[in-house]
Length: 554
Image (cartoon, rainbow, N blue to C red):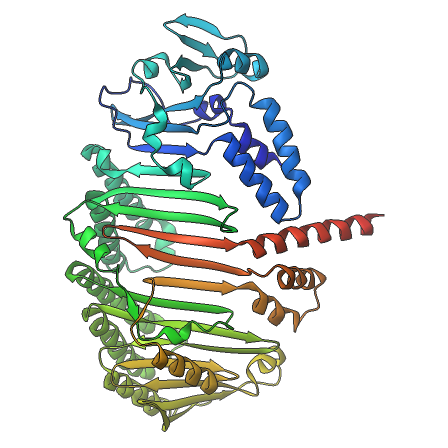
């Protein structure tokens, strides 16, 4: 309840008091580096009312509405609330704003007198208020502007809501960073701080005790910093937004960014717009988890990935050499396998096309999984499998690897099996008496499947993929279905809370959490969506849990 009240109450005087330092006046041509947007109180309360009803806790929504109605007196409930940040003297300075009803500022001073104290009229429409820390407030054009000093209120926009764009209509809460409005000096300072922080860590006792190879770490860091620098130079804006949508019956969190026109970043984004896959079969409707990946890489992305892979290869080789549990006479054999694996990945990335997916199927006391996709050279994968088989011949208890035991379509199948000890009862319940992993290798394809129904799942994925060639998809899609996960869990533990969740989801449906990427010509949005049934199930379980606790306390 406290969270809901804080969200709806919006005493931005207090919020501004703890914001980034404020000092100088806003420039004549206002170019904020960032804005924060809160939807109108009317819209926010309507969405809170929907969420609490969906969760079966309508009383909480009514309580929020009652308290907000009283404590937000003086604020116009139809317009958004926000804050903008401007650079000045190597700092970011903020100004908060809220819409007012007629005589709204006087009403706010009266209702919140305990926090704001007796306001002092400083002239020119500016007031000083606050009991613990002073804030400065100015009413202009039906808006109250709040800053940490009087100078911050000298130049103000006529209608600050225009700075927020469509954010208040699309999200309950959102923040946007206008990257190109950040002064170059401040950008460089931020990048230098990142580099300095990494150097300090690499030279710290913790890093030395962890035996981190600092040269390799610096190589990896250079790649990451280059990506950040590219984003800082070529991105136009970044934003994050949280929204509740009753019409669509879901709650979303969007993370998006847009690139400057004509940049390599914009070009990379445009390449993802018409993504297709030849592995649509991973998206099985009955699965607990599905994932699809289909993206294209430009020359810059390929070069950066190659640099990262080289650093990773060196790091893994060093780990093998330094691992005391690996016999010295086996280390070169292991590196002889790892090297070609990295080579296969590098060649695949160099094609500029990534296409694949993964799936996990859960049934009561049964787990099966599959994952894979397109590779540059399937024959190289077969060589790696043969190396593994040869290298394991003289190793005690090494899993059995049967090469080319059969085929499925154009895939040659190899099977790896290993007995599961009797003491691992739970693993035997899930996987059977032995772990089975099947590797299917084609000229340009590799798919690995495992678990109790490994071969059946592999066939289902292939058949479904064959029926949907070049299917249009988002570049990335991850879907998690809670109902099969909970039923799987219940098969091992009759937890009443789990049973309550299952019952609620079976009544409501909509049990998915989805993460999906939505590309544009020079924009990209990653959306995390929680369906209504998940919210209903959480609310229903919370009520049942509280009722159960109350009965236990009596």
